[in-house]
Image (cartoon, rainbow, N blue to C red; front, side, top):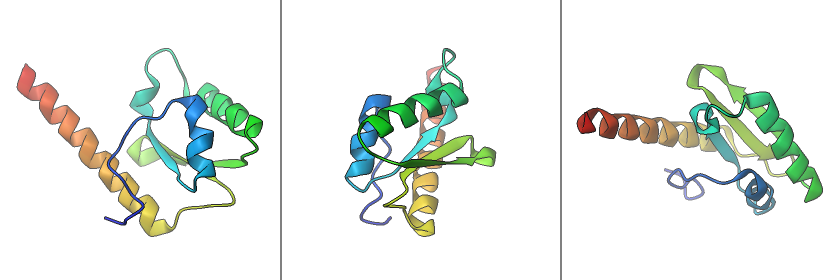
Length: 104
């Protein structure tokens, strides 16, 4: 895994801008939105928080993976970094699903 790709961790909406300012990017699993949020509202809220911090963001939906990439337009990740992030999240998703099956 690339040095800049870390194990998945959840960042709150208000903290995303700070991550992006540090040159990071975020890939969100859509199931992390929960039942009370929809993707469009989440994107609007993230964009608002980012604009307040002076960060211009872009969103790239990854529909077959049910994920969305959020990045600073001035510090975009490489294709390889995004691919590694998606793979790490798929592994995380599979690990969490495996734990749920074992509890039943």
